[in-house]
Image (cartoon, rainbow, N blue to C red):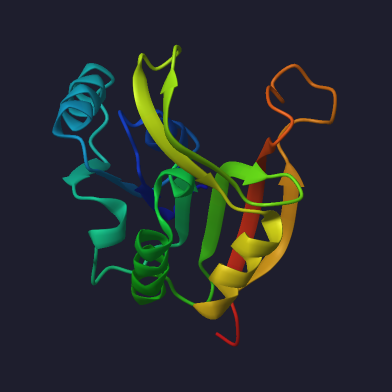
Length: 181
């Protein structure tokens, strides 16, 4: 990560952005749609004397930049985007990536088939929520439509691990690069 420019889409309070900074990233742009989360992130950056993380208030799918990033990180975001929002995000992604960019997706994935939750109450969240867990093949196909090829994909936790909480889903890490430069 040393010397790289990083775009963190769906950055929340910046927990990953701060990790990238710690690993030597030159500049991190943290895009988040919640103003309250951005304020927490900015406060934490000041506490840590971090000045190379810029928080931007925007939904990930509506974010657009003239800057081209070395690393684009998307974590825990895609499950909360409907198909139209996901397509818009990926359409924009090509504009601010470059041939040597690395796109890292860390997200919930449906096991065997797409798994959807529609307005279900979660005791953990104490709210109703919706989520779409696309399959690994669906992630590969949607990224391919926008010119990105999958170079690596793996589960974050081995089968049988206690963090594989639900039989329908797994947390996976995907590594994409631009096809044909």
